[in-house]
Image (cartoon, rainbow, N blue to C red; front, top):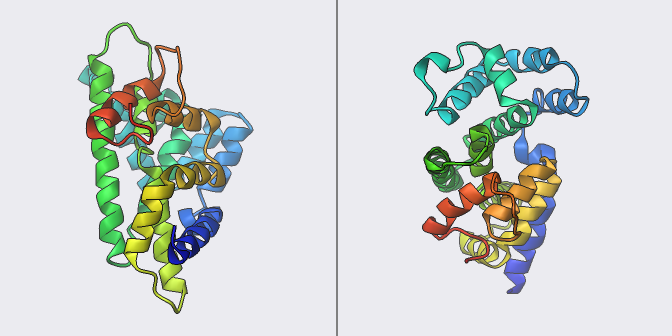
Length: 242
């Protein structure tokens, strides 16, 4: 790693460690996380989500998209039905990605275009992963767990690029994008795992992410990570190639 790349690596890691700077809007996420940790009444979670109509619509859409193989009559028709079916962990994962995407849309060019390319990739991976799940027989895996996991497939790259955009906007010295590319290629696993840790995402998501990227093995045939692993392997995106 060159001196310049080391500087970029160090400063990007510092930004990643600042949850509020990376994710931005915290008005919903903070109380939502507290309500979930408290493991209280689902009605508290519903009230929090309902306070943001855009998030409510997004969660309803996500729930129905993950359950696309179900008969039309069984689709969720109300926010309450959707949230009860999703479960609190999936609610928070979806909410996190919703506000992260909102934050990404605020980036300046050329970073906005680059990070939106990564986001489009995650959406395509999520579609493929859910389709893969519905083709499997003899497994008992929640489609929303597969979809939420898939939305974090290239999480490290997205967070690193976002942090780099903030770094260049705050510094008088401009760091070339080539330096970040070299850092991501060489330190992708480190950046990804630190992003998971710093941003307070649930342990199960991190565990399944490691399984999906071939960094941890499992004998659990109902692991969402195994479903995603097949999709990532076909795309050549595994952090640890098979």
